[in-house]
Image (cartoon, rainbow, N blue to C red; front, side, top):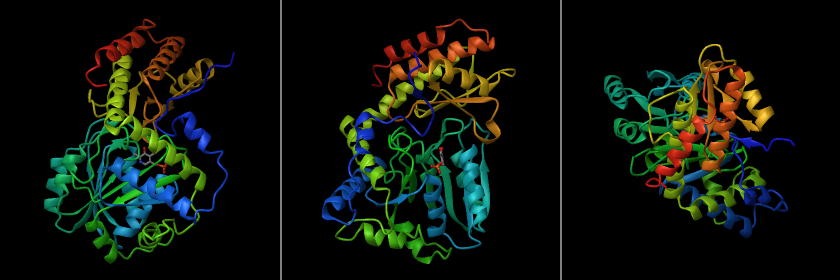
Length: 385
Ligand SMILES: Cc1ncc(COP(=O)(O)O)c(C=O)c1O
């Protein structure tokens, strides 16, 4: 029998059956009152996900497109920005800003550790000319979740921009309470939607910066996108990924029906299970034992283990798809995604496949201890679910 396929990477993520089914709806014209009602519901539900009253815009692109759009819409050539870097995605923001001719000051932390937001505050105080500060919520490369509430306080006097690609819907985020001006995310992680749609929530302060920003823009021009989004017949200025939006609509409905707080608690438990299981296999988890890390668990593998062969074996023999570390983490990190349409039994299956595949590589472990530790964690985490 072919092994059952289990996608356990931190995006793209598995789809609930109803989200898959939404893809077979006939294509509709998006400039109709009927579609406008769907689009408006998506916008309202995204605001609930972001926990914001700010405007939310939707783009047909991967998340990086929406990040690039945020830079274009908020900044001018030569502007000075701070980027908090503790992994591949923070690093990518710094590269993106430099590509647009911005001056970048990085506040770093060791990969696997959270950024110290007091250092962000100190750096902003030292450089009075910084316009915007950028931080990644869940650094998907290591699973570490930065303290965005503290980031919001540290960056209160500049524009604050947060990448919550793998955080939204998996890790607590309170855009308005934490005072974050711009939050950017997309559908293909905890939002259980195929890749191709991204969104940004934009505060009034950010709109004021936008009015002065002079970097060239067109496709992602927030003024154009806002005009059609907020028109009587809500729509996007360019042809949207209609099918993906229909799927996003169903996915958001499911998340809100489960209840966002319940969804977040489920992710807390999944994170605890993955970390307990991995540690019981004698492996090291990146980062501290942190309940915020509900989206992805990154595992540092001992020297001598061929990560790609391990991942291949888990997939070919047991149907479980893991992914390696991106960028500089390639070759010694394996990541287990547990965001979105994932439950405790998916995590148990994944840990079982990991144990068996590790055993095949000759790693010294008692098969079943990882699964047992994760199962016990699930059993005793009733307080969190
Ligand atoms: C934190 C973070 N930022 C950015 C991205 C890039 O997103 P995309 O591939 O949709 O452009 C990812 C994707 O994994 C991510 O996890």
